[in-house]
Image 1 (spheres, rainbow, N blue to C red):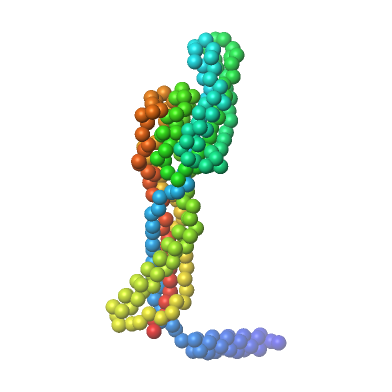
Image 2 (tube, rainbow, N blue to C red):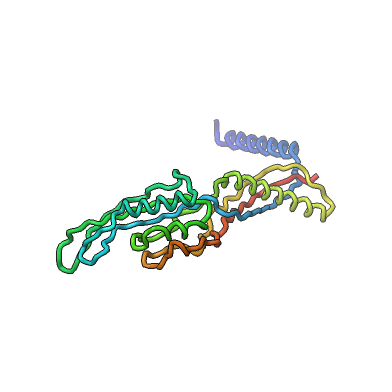
Length: 241
């Protein structure tokens, strides 16, 4: 095949491709459509709050005598938890540590143990009352480890549906403004907004063992944690009738 024949064959192929493309375009007329975004959000109170309580052994006397054992402190905490009506399975050991006390230039001769416990509660109302019933010198600290909402997956689904409904409503009133009617959905896309819980704020974030806690006078807190905000955005494409 000479060069001229090759050029001719290439030209015929290009013409045929263009013809097929034009034919396909004629077979599929352009669809009138509208593309919109819709969003929805909701705030809920966490109903699963994980509070860490740390207890530590200590000596009542400065000369390393009369040690208060960790088991004594643990029993105090366990009793307080039971009296508060918290289920046994919601009270667990988080970690165990130990350290030696140094006194001046002398080598350490005593070993003191520290234990942390995790309390799973629905709110923080009873935490102050629980800790007040434990020997205050044995309380190393309290901290909120994390918090969750038990029905978060269902909440996410509900919010996504509301966001999609908001997109449809937006498309509808926009089209009505120009005398058009909304048709069926062509495409739906979830926009990934991510999910980051808001910080927790309460009247109790960290309590030092040096704080004065009167077991009989300690009232229950009525201040709750900050709500969790969940937000989603959906993109939708609809036909225009």
